Every structure is written in C-alpha cells, then in structure tokens.
Length: 545
Image 1 (tube, rainbow, N blue to C red):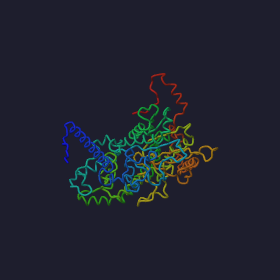
Image 2: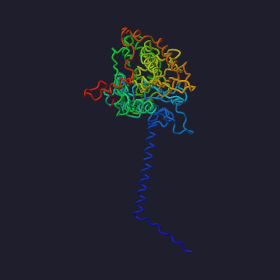
Image 3: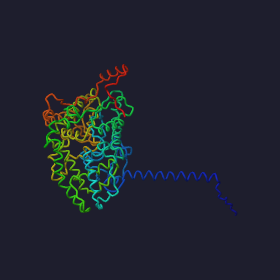
Image 4: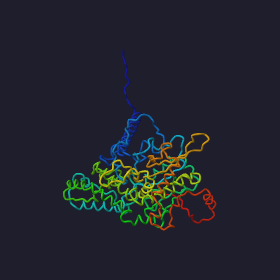
C-alpha cells in the first residue's frame, strides 16, 4: 500500500503569524518574570533585619494581601498554607516609634476590627500622629556629625561597619528635609497618610456618606509635618474635589493654655520644671542606655581599632535604621545590631516617652485629659447633634499624655531603668509608631428586646487592634458600655487633676479645647444663606490640595 505524505512547507504568511505569536509569548513570560521580581523585592529588598523574609514582613496597607485591617470580610475564606506572621520577629516592632506604622498585635481582642454582629459604628474620634518623617534637626545633626567623624578618621572599616564604604546618607539636603514627611519608598509618610485616609473612608463609608453634604471640620497642630499629614489624609478620605471639608490649624503657642491640641507646649510648669517636666524623660533615657550601649561600643571599636564611640553616637546608629527605612524601604544599619540590642533600643524608646509625658510624668495625665474629656462628652452627646466624625492630627508627645490620662496602658509599676520589664503594657513601637492612631469608636447595637432602645458601647482601636479597657469589657467584642466609659473618664479626671492648677496657669485661662466640635446644622444653613451675596473671602478656609 502506498502512503502519500504531504510535504511540510510553511508559507511566508503563516511563518509571520507564528513569529508574532512567539514574540507575544516571550513578552508575556518576560512581563511575568519582572512582576515576580518586583514582588520579591518588595517583600524582601535585602537580607538581614531591615526587611526580613515574608513571614516577618509587615507591609504598608496598600501592599497587604490580607486586608482585614480595612474592616472588610476576607475575599478568600478557605485554608491557607501561610503561617501567622504575627509570631515572627520583626525589626519594625522594635524601633520605638522611629519607624513605619505597624499594626498593634499585643493585648488585642481576638477577631480583629470587624464590627460585632448586631452593631454599627455611629461615631469615630481619632487622634493621629503625623506620618513617617525624616529625623528632627537635633537628631539629624548628631547623625551627620558621627558620619563625618568616621569618614575623617581614615580608619579602614571592617566588620559591622564595613558597609559604610559604599553607603550614603539618606538625604542630600538635610536642612531641607529634617522634620518633614518622607516622600519616597513603600513607607513614605505622604503615602501612608493618603492610604490611611482611603482605608478609613472604606471602613467608615456609612459615616462618610453622612458628611458629604455638610460642612465638616478636621484639625491639626501647627507643624508642617502634621499639617501635611492631615492634608494627605484628607485627600484620601474626603477626596481632592471636596468643598465641604475644612482643615483647621490649631496654634501651638503657649498662650492657648487648655484650648489646644498640644498641651505640652502650653502647660507652664511642665515646660519650666527642670527635674520632673519635659526633660525628665531624657534624664531617665540617659540612665538606662548607659546599661547597654557601652558594650556595643566596645564591640564596634574592637572591629575597628582607632575609632571610639560615645553612648550618644551608638544611639544615633540605632536611630538611623528606622529613619532610613522610612526613606528607602530598608537599611543596613539594622544589621549592625543583634536582636537583643534591638530589644534594648526599643525599651530605651519606651523609657523616654513613659517619663517625658506618659504615665511616669507628674504632668502627663492632666495634659492628656483635655482632649480625652472633650471627646467623652461628644461621644455621650451622640452623632445626631455632635456629628459622626472627628479627626485630630498631632505629635506623639500629644498622644502619649492622652493615653496616660485614659490609663489603658498602665503597668503595675513604673518602668525600671536598670533592666527591661518584659511583660510591660507600654510599648511605644505599637502605640505611637509614625502614623500611629487611636480611634474611639462608638457602637450602636441592637437591643436585647424589641421594646428597648439601642444599646451604646465604646471600643478602643489602637493601630487597628481593639484594646479592651480593664474592668469595662461587658459589651460586644469586649467593648465598654457607654456609662462605664463615662464613669471611667470621670475617675481618671480626678486622678489627673485640674489642668490650670497642675500647670500653674491663671484661674481664668482656657481649660478645654473649644474648637473641637463639628458645626451645627443651624450654622451650616446660615453659611449657605450667605453664599453668593458678596465676593469677599470667607473666614472659613476650605481644605484642598
């Protein structure tokens, strides 16, 4: 039997078609490889402690695959082969407020921030620290002086500091950038602030919709980095085209007394007391860091004969780790120190804040009670007349006294300065990281019987972790019944003392933040009635970028 085989000849047209197909396939494969490489870089840009492996990594919210902190149900609820990230060691949890925002993981209620069944959030009151920033002028000057000293020594660097031969400081314009928000990298302050606005708009969308057509205020202290944080947050939350949101800048001048967001600047005795006032935290810091920094200096000096380092210089090295991360996303300074030495640095940062304006400072509670008491009164009044949303932007030194007044992170004893208290409640890294925020959320919950009114509770959201208030956890999700919350704040006010008395101010000085209130519907209607009657600038300055 004869079998005829057709000759396999590819026409020029067919060949061109196949060539195009092969090119598209190769392009697709290349694109996938580039995408995979980008993801790997974001998850682990360099080995070491700076941005550890994916099990240790805490990515900014916009890069997280698990968006539970947005208050959303997970898209995928099946089994996962990924271990829990929270049990892994992570440098970001040991930077003592000098690093990027992180979620609070210690001492939080199981179940995350999802609203308990049968409840809804009808008010949210936030006090937020500014976003990730460059070092302050003083801290930055110490860093630059240290780097100049090392460079001018002529010592051939070895061991832990060998990387400095090819390393450059993370800003070419220190005087321009010091104390301002960072604007590059995955942890930039501008990006974090905007992302937080979008996240809270997602979480509180039902409240956001209620303020769309009404004049809504939000507040910031009078500092460039804080103002910028509020503006970027506003862009994410209200939108660039919003004409109803107004950012009010509250003066940090000492004459404001209690009518302020920054009581540490207006409490006269706190500012002027040389022993137990503002500088008390630094005094305690110097005592504690003398217990661990000399050993580090000795190690680095043995690696690099000819160099000598002071406690302050070693401390500056540790500070550069977190600050460089906020600019570049990673830092080789993090690899210079061991995990134990990072725990010691973390505790040093806890010490300074605890004694500078926190529970260990005699003035802290009185200063912090101003915002706390005003907020408690607004929560008691309710959203119908007081409005549903309150956003205040400040420094960490303003959040710390508020928490001291509230007493939610009180330890059984003051933090010792000769050893680390391992089981302490006060952990600055998780309480006031850059971009750190405390949100008092009022819950309106279905009554237990049809004839009863809705029940009101308050819960405390600290960096996307719900923290129970000891002795007041009888509500859904360990929230606190409204009356219990108000009684707690009243008791804490008695402990704190009168702001004017504690601070040595005149008896008629302002004793509360009078600005912290949303406009009433009547004032909004009156403002609308004046619109278009003249071309003169309005006193109200509407927010926008």
